[in-house]
Image (tube, rainbow, N blue to C red; front, side, top):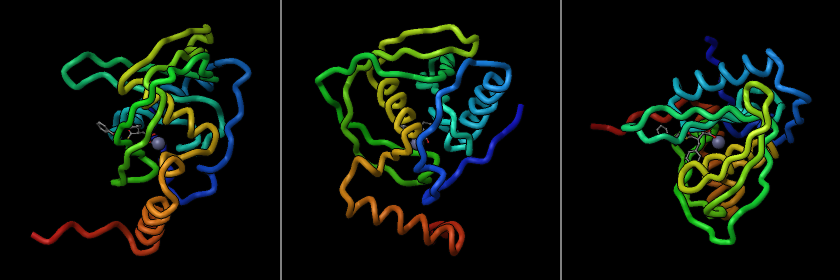
Length: 176
Ligand code: K1U
Ligand code: ZN
């Protein structure tokens, strides 16, 4: 197991488009396993390869509820085949935007085709939190962050806060 460093915004590496994998080989399979370990350790419910500095179209997701068994998904070259017209708003977070959250509207249901860790083509239909997280992670593959879906006023506030944190260190804990 290897834990990978998660890139924190603002960082130009989070704004680049990732490249398709030609096939899920042993290196991609190891990347998927390391990303999943990194995601659970963070802790998070999704992670995209560009967040760990790898510009490949690979994401991992586990949106199972705490009381349910883990349901990890490892996906290469995910493609949305269909998205519902109905949209739903959900409060999103991002491991690359620590402690920042905001409401984002996305299609409520999506059908997605991808290559699994064994290079086999799979299709799933997702709704609820799973649909939110898959779409959020797929945005990372295009260099898009959840703050790109909100007003420029809020986005700039969040990015300014994160820039300050990088310059001066992490926010102090609230006084007791
Ligand atoms: O950085 C990421 O892309 C991961 C992100 C995924 C996500 C969460 C919520 C809505 C959309 C996308 C996270 O995992 S942020 C952390 C988080 O939400 C969480 C952490 C532990 C338990 C439950 C949730
Ligand atoms: Zn994210």
